[in-house]
Length: 128
Ligand code: FES
Image 1 (cartoon, rainbow, N blue to C red):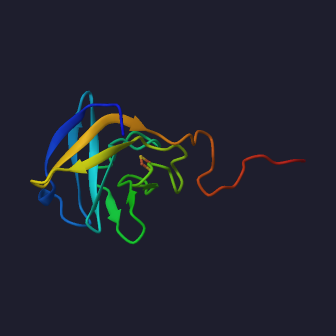
Image 2: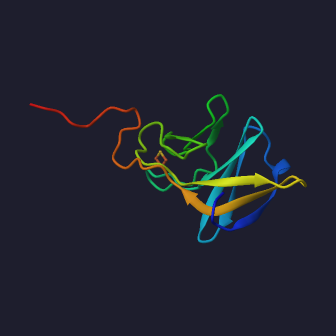
Image 3: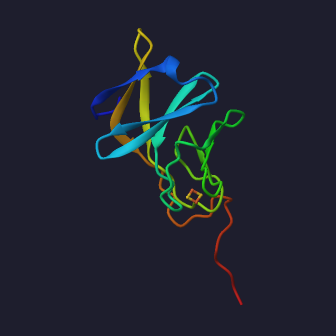
């Protein structure tokens, strides 16, 4: 169980499958996406060039979010960057739904360590 504080966001029914919505959380925004009826929350800021991810496409087949600016894709479950031009993960948050269908987010974030890795798994090293 997460140690952070649970914050009420709003009705889950406001976010249909394949859609997302941004919410203020402290000094930043988070994005909540509905992938085939399962909700995920990630930081609403692309790690490539700081674009808001809120207008990005939810790819329901793979539960990924595509950045609307240059097309980097992020894993909605983990926040991990899956394609260029983003190399670094976005933070992800735990979500829960109350019995009344209201989404709540935990303020404690998790962020996979991904700095300076090519999301395709290809190293940058080369030899002469
Ligand atoms: S700002 Fe998101 S891919 Fe460039």
